[in-house]
Image 1: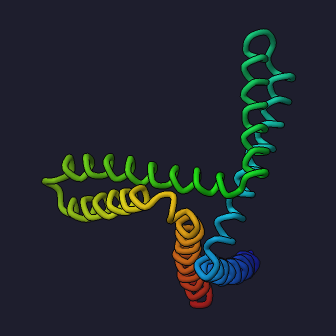
Image 2: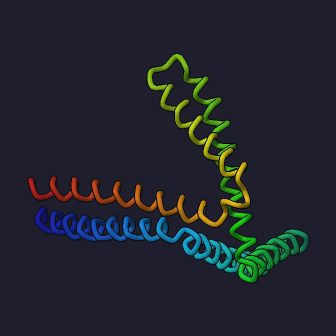
Image 3: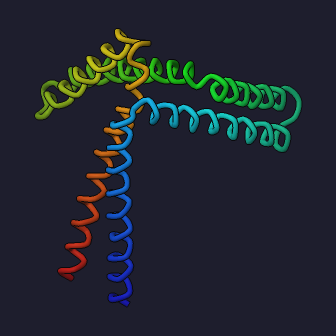
Length: 183
């Protein structure tokens, strides 16, 4: 029984190592071609909106009646229209996505700044302040240079995220594999 569990852990960690390496490679490709990566992400967002809109309509028709059904149908149609618009105008979708990211970072930075000062007497509050300032600065920089930076921001940020996530997954999986080997 224990050997079967260990083999499962080794097999799962092996697949996780492969996934980590693929994520690192995908991140490097996204950074090397940020415009292409950004457009791919815009298409993913568009198709997600379209499928979500279809699901919203089905949900509204099956579960609700009256005013709630109409609201669900309108919401579903809004998702579909937005998704189709983004598919037809991926450049504008990339502009919008870049602006959404900038706004998110600014808002996150403000909330993290408030949190940092609330944590001020505690040890480590400076790291929260550091995160808040960097995030706020990054959001403001993206916003200040928008729309010119839209060609590279989304792809580059997703690329960095993939690399960091891939390295984290790789390191964790290798640690799990090492522990499993020692057992």
